[in-house]
Length: 592
Image (cartoon, rainbow, N blue to C red):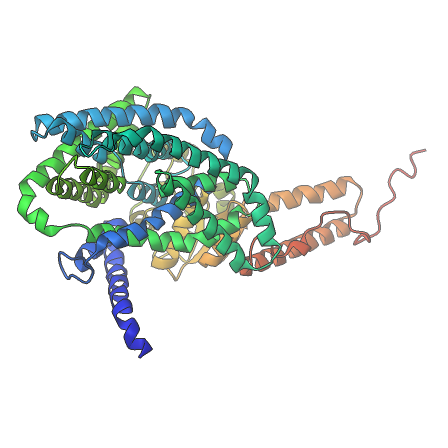
């Protein structure tokens, strides 16, 4: 009886998961990306096709937690000092781009589609709020979040998240139902909520996680991390800000915590699953009946709004010093509407500012823009290539067939390559920096141009035939992305990865790499060994200390992989050993 009672609940979940696990790998293999795969699967099982789900709005609201988790993890990577350094980009670049885009989109609504000025403003203001989910997913897949251009994108998204509060206040002011007097109160409430979160994060989060860590139970620390994320998101939603903003602030406040890596690894599985569910829900929300009835208007609005917004983004980027190629790429990435448009349009309908038909049309245009963005970005990747990559001495990776594939020819990869060449191994080397490739050619190296985070480049670089793949890039996100793709697509190759720090090593081991090494551990050990020699210890004592330190570090890392960042603490030496491994040499005895 219990199984039968669960059937109506589990059945649709099975259908949803089945659609995702079929569509996403298929779309990725076709080179269309996972986001479009989720959209397609959602549209298939939604009310417009199979009708397995009839209320996508409920699922969409729950699935926004995926965006919340994503922004929390991004916040963990940004120290408050770094975020403060971005204030000029957030309130300068973000403000100018959004203001110009709203003005041009409103003008297009009036002049091209003959919308009333207020309706045109609502339509344009909603479309200007780009999709945090689509853009951040794209930046992560490309390993560009930490890059200067990626930081500008994050800054713009943060400003757009903040903008939802004044836009909702404007909607209330424009409402003919008399809701305008609450605008200032809403803004004051939002500021008070943000101040409360900052105070709690500054003085309470550290002691809170220290208390949980003393329980020595990983599930308690995971529950605490989820409590902080969801609590911060709930507080911000209660005061009128976005849930994603609350999670981001909480992440920034925890970025300096010693528990950061453990929290990030605990949140990661929830983030990925809920992010996929969000894209599925957006696909379900696509009303094909509206598309069929209004398709000429929808296509026209989609084309005009995307082009007008792209022009505004490009102009702003150039005005703030971006080169032509970077400005074009940013325009392509931000040209779509986003999830916060649904919030604004819903509030406008409730306030009588727009009617139900206009809401359906505007929302459908936003969904279509989110769906076509991956296709536009794929086309842009092929058309907007860096001219420097085509100069003499830079050859793209194509048809490589080495025994080993080495990805990243920086200071780390150059040394690793020497060992392989010393025994005559056939190695294919790729790097995504044309200047580095040209410099390597001066010394006789043949390095091919290619971005190792892209699956198509891995294939043309010979990953399918390689016995060993060495990942030597200096970007931890790029390393993790490459590891994930290689383990999934080329399981027969041994994966050797360079890690950034201990937390990254834990993540790579859990991801299934065959070997990982922290980029500074061996040089640090050698430095310490030389220190012992200079203090007078003989070579046997130095070797014994070196082996003992390596052994304890390896044991500690193994315990941390099975536990958390605090595991294996007893393997750390925090004071001189009471009884040295070997007798202390008598220094300066014969100085007289």
